[in-house]
Length: 236
Length: 290
Image (tube, rainbow over all chains, first blue to last red; front, side, top):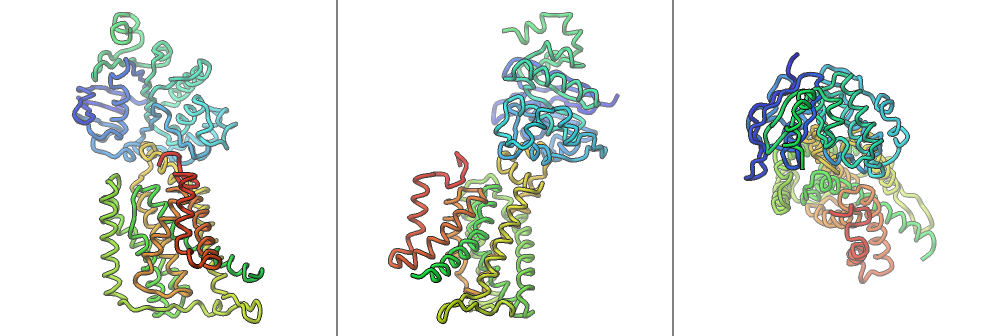
């Protein structure tokens, strides 16, 4: 299996303060990675650095066979990366359909597996709301739209920040089911969420961040065998 | 004032408003999407009129002046964006004002070298040269009616592109959250370039269209720039629909102001602007926080 994403010694800065202190992470094609850790440990920063939106970074990021350390966000996205940010990033003045159409494009390999019809099939709720403006949607609908919009770019890797934050349990379950569908499509994901129990059911690997570094990287089974790791990095 | 005179003034006001809209729409797009204050916008209106004079004098065809003038202006916009304007994104307003003011000086000087500083007139196309006789003493030029039609068509085209096309969706999305559009793979640099060039072309189109009913003279862009800013602020920065409403309000206020209150007509549009801003500080259709 070839590595889709390879991060080596990544350091990130907000002005003078360093947030990431040498992160190493490899994601293979089709792999689902759960990224967990307390607030402020650098999870969102890592995702933003991978998208290119955070420019102040050092180290090495290889994505889809090329370095993306100095690439613009749009270039990285066109190599097959899609981003579902914390807070969803929905365009409120655009309708549901417009939010989906504006990002639509074939994948790197030219595949057009994800069309607007397919997204509506996965999220029937969005189809009902298709004419509504983005600002009229509930939090759960916005998250579905944000994921749908990412899928419309036919990506190879989706970064999903705070997948189920603030969502009702039933909606959250929908999102977890969707992650299963995405995984079956062979799309790799890095999912950030507080709900590590649900994550460990869907993820291939659990990655724990602590103080800007990777503190644990292993299978959900390996994490279960040593509860002290979770206790140390997630316990309050 | 009888109904007919009123009708003629109404038509004049609407026509003036539509023309203002073309120019202000370009300004509000550049302002709202690129975040750039372009003081040179009026200079492109002036340039458009000189292009119209120059091309129609050489070819004898107003249609050639229309197409050629818009095309040259669009290309000029692409070049200027690449050379200068793209350095202004994200910079403070002082840098933008200084650079675009510098552009005014350069454009004026180039215009001086190319076309001189003489006042010119442009003949409308032959088939639009007549007037419609309304009464024994009252007539209305056909060209002014045609101007309304062309402006309406252009306004329709602008709304179509922004509301109905994918490019329009991207432009609206980018106006809201540029980083998100980039993270979705939209090359926003390219979008910026076309929006700027399109805005310039609209200003030039206004200048070209007005050239047969006004005179073509060096300072003609200055007044237009001020009025366009009034329209943009009135309608809400970045809102094309707001610019349309604002432009019609200004056109009608100015036209009827001159008829009914000639002594104070020159300040009426500013009174209108101040009143609207007191009521809606972000303009008629402006976003909550500008």
